[in-house]
Image (cartoon, rainbow, N blue to C red; front, top):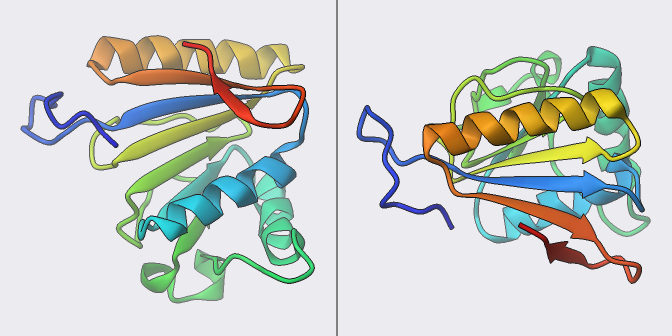
Amino acid sequence: MADTDTMASSGEALAEVLFYHLERQPLERVLPSLLARTLERGWKAVVQAGSQERLDALDQALWTYSDDSFLPHGQRKAGYAEEQPVFLTTGPETPNAAGVRFLVDGATAETFNGFVRIVYLFDGADPDALAIARSQWTAAKKAGCAVTYWQQTEEGRWERKA
């Protein structure tokens, strides 16, 4: 949950910002489970990727990540952007009034307002991704957000490290 005592200058609560350091599983395996948990809480999500190619790959992965399930989602080109439980984009828009914004593949937040959570998922083997994550960590802390850092254990569970 977001720290509702932390307020932006506009009076709007700042998001809780979570950083997931991907070392053991790829984004295509981790993101679906995080999105499923988001939807289970009754929240909508927006996933912002750094490129259209990555977005298209995620679009396909969300339909096929499980043999017995899929995550309802769409991009603007599919229509009904406002109705999507999970909206995929390369830009800052949030047409579905999502409470959670996921940033992947080098995407960065322009603001920390307007969301319950902002979640960064970054590849631990990519020096550029690490540098972006560090920069965003610093920006989120400077903005007054509550930030947490998560790393995956050998067993595949996520453990809070900071």
